[in-house]
Length: 504
Image (cartoon, rainbow, N blue to C red; front, side):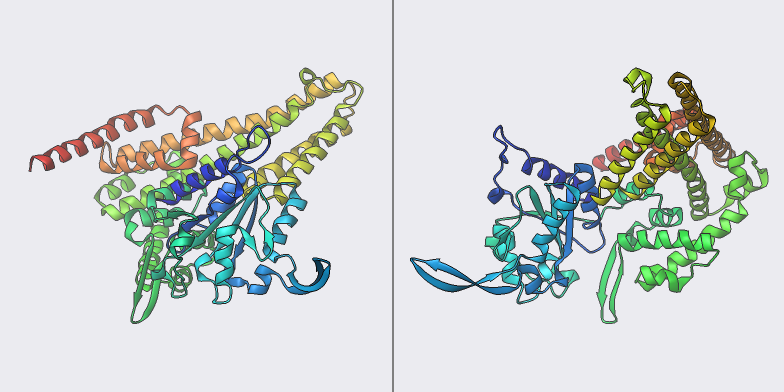
């Protein structure tokens, strides 16, 4: 299955394992809660989805790469203890608590989350001395003498032997005690994720036309060559930072992430053209409504790769605008939910000034945010949005104190005025994003009309995470017209082609 389907399967498994009966016991006893083993090539996202799953399920996460551990750190250190059996005293070897098990208890203490995921990576690459311990761990959920706490689901990951010489095969007894999920790379799933994470459009558009390079791992007499989804994502972020710093990404830099010389060279050439087309076609001018006939004519005669590049550049700039709209919308929504808590309709304390109520609200917000952040329940975007809301609450409090608004009714009226500024900012960004989209449609119509290039453009709008969110809020008539006309025609042609192939 692809990584998206694997993620859903893990979430479903966690939901099933953590379901309790009327007496508070887990419906599936811990002994029958099979550990999950994700098996797949390196870099497809096996490790990355664990943080997403934990955040979405609202549970803790403790992650370890087992190859970094010795038997002593995994099992614990031996010590001698005295015990009495049948009236006789004996010196018995016992073990300190495993570092891994102790980390779970530390997570419970620091976050208050009593349920979670213990994620063990590279499970099938352990050393000779640690192998028996890992088999015991998978079968009995213990490290040494210490059991994994109830409510903590075990998820592991490993690479097939063709990708790692250190891999150990599990016997049938062990395999019969785990949930085994094979994960395959899937570009379309990764592309949807890439749009959501706002990865560099040069990477997305390049892989759109060369999907065979999305995940490529080869072993030759000259060594191992590979390009993985993880490598593309990390390279994307580095390109973005280099652009901000005014530095050039050359073939050597690309090769640090895409360790497949042929692919690294090809992408470097593509990136140079990407920048060239950005300047040649004056993308920012197009979004502002300046449509030059000479550029439209040039693009009509251009090779298909160049057309795709320009479409990618237009989508990239639109994506930045759409993300700004989404961020402001989410920020405004979070702020509104907090302010509702002290509104007169919500029964705010009339004897406490609105500024003091805001201060208390801000402190509670900050405390909740800090606990969620320490528990790992926020991704970076959510973290930043919450910081913004905290800053706005502080600004509102300081404004009320400075203006000495007085009565709570007047203070609440002032709060609504300040909140409306944020709402107006959202409406402005939405309108600006809408104008930019309309201008891009103007350019696309002038250059391509009802062509295959327009199909590509509409398809990418339907794929992008932020473009989908934007189009739910902004009513773009041309988008719906082209979406219905062109994509329906495309599906009709596909059906006809299938019928013809059956006839042959």
